[in-house]
Structure formats: C-alpha cells, structure tokens
Length: 378
Image 1 (cartoon, rainbow, N blue to C red):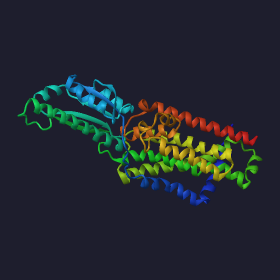
Image 2: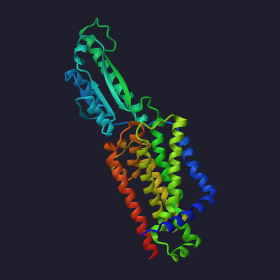
Image 3: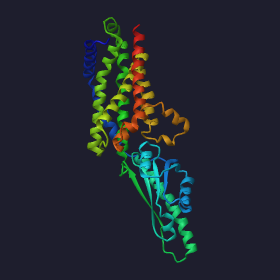
Image 4: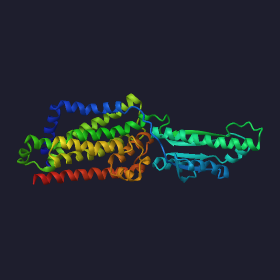
C-alpha cells in the first residue's frame, strides 16, 4: 500500500525544489499568458470537402438542381439528408457535419412565380475560421445558381425584373460572430498542459539520476508508486493553475465564456493533464537524461498536439493516412471536448466517447510510469 506520510514527504520535497527553481516556476505560470497572446490571431486556411447535410423540403427538380451544384463543388461533401431541425442539430452537435443546407417547401413555387425565396445555410461556428470560409463558399454556390436561374428566366420571360430570385441566409450556430478567439482558447488549454508536461515532469526523475540522489532514495523505505505520485502532485497543481489562468484570461481579454458545465471542463482538463504528466514522467524514468527527455517530450507531445489535434488545421482536410494517425493523439479528443463544452454547451451524453478515450490514455500512462519505475528500482 501507498503510505500517505511518505507520499506527502516526496510531494513536499518536490514542492521545495519547484519553489527554489523560481525561473522554471515563473515560466510555467507565464506560459498561458504567452500562448494566449501568440495564438490570439485568427488563421486563414484553405477549405475543401466540408461535411454537409441537406434538408430538402421542396423535393423538386429545382431544389435538386441547387443541391447538385453543392455536390459538384470541391468545397462541399453532402453526407446525408435530414428531415427536421433536431436532426440537423444532432449532426452538428456530434461533429458529423459542419454545414446544413435548408431548402423551403415553396422553393419551386416562388421561383416559377418570379418571387425571391430564401435558402438557409447553417454553419457550425465552433470552428470560426472554417465556418467563415464555408459560409462564403456556400454563398458563392448560391450566386452561381442565381446567375443560371436568372439567365433562364430572362430567356423565357424577357420582361422579368427579378435580379436575385434566390436569397441565401447564413447563420452560424454556437459561435455567431465566428470569432477566432472562441476556437483558440480551448485549444490553448491543451497546448499549455503539454508544454507543462514537457518542461517539468520529463526531467524530474532524470534529475535525480544525474545529481546522484536517486541512490539515496532507493535506500529508503520509499516505494516506487510513492515516489512517482509524489513527484507528480506539485506539477499537477501547477498545471491546473495554468488551466485556471487560461480560462480567466480568455474570458477577461477576449470575452470567451464557458457555455457548458465549467466543472466538467475542469474535470476533463484534470484527466488530460494526468495523462500528459505521467507521459512526461515515463520519458524521464526511461531516458535518465533531462535534456533528452525534454526534447523527446516536446517532439512527441507538443508538436503532434499543435499540428494533428485539430487545433490549427482541420482534421477533415488532411490525407486519410494522416487522419488515422491523429486518432493516436490524445489532444484531439481533449480539444473536441473543450470546444463542445465551451461553445456548444454539450455534456457527456455527446462527449462520452472522447472522455472514455482520455480516461484510457490517462490510465495507461499511470500504469506505464509505475511499471517502468519499478523495473528501474529492481
């Protein structure tokens, strides 16, 4: 069994070291501020094959012609046809679609009557940059249909004065202003925790080996799990403090509020942080070199989180092989959870699979770190 007294002693020892190394502590607490300022600008990315669903209430040749333009466009990929707004909302909530095209029942009737008819384009605003581009592309396709329809009407009815018989009305759900900061803040939280793990826990055990104090620890009644968990506790508290700082700065500086359950958000952050810390601890145990462990932690943790998690680049736009690789990046699931809670206000009824995968990741890292350290003690 783990002794609470010995666990507290190790945690206290590590706290003292953290306080004495005030430069690292200052940097760890300054990281959220630095990253929020660095990633405070929206990024413009090319967009292709946006997952789209359609609710065709008209079901006429005219509506099918409009849908065919979206099918033929390289920017949209029509995945399914829905029959109601709740079905559309579920598709957007689950991330199955990013755009929904709603064609009213009187679409063909108004066109033949030379009247303006509104087509609704609903975009998932939880990814502001992608949604902004998708909305613009959707309007462009609508303008192409307008030009074709206008030419046809003028051919059969030269006296027609209808300039734009079809009017597209776009609306972004979850992030109505399509503000990039609303998307960046949840992702920054993941980046912060990966950096903390790479910078701090990846050197803890390696430092003991390099300074020659590990032999003294081994000679004590201290057990492996007590040392591993005791060393993680200070950095876990620092990491959760960084999460709090990132959430507070996002709200104060950029007006990014948590729509969903804040308690669930911090619980998921604690789960992801646990996995990241024990991942860094495992590297420190195995490599026994502070510099090498730190570098590998950055390469294997920070870079995949930045590039392959969906934080900056939409996973749907990546090659199929790379999309498969992203399934191995825990930050992909954590960022999906953060955005779901931050902007959509959804809970575990939608996010349960991502939460389950994070739980498995954290559990595997805890087990791996303890097993590796027990092997080293033996």
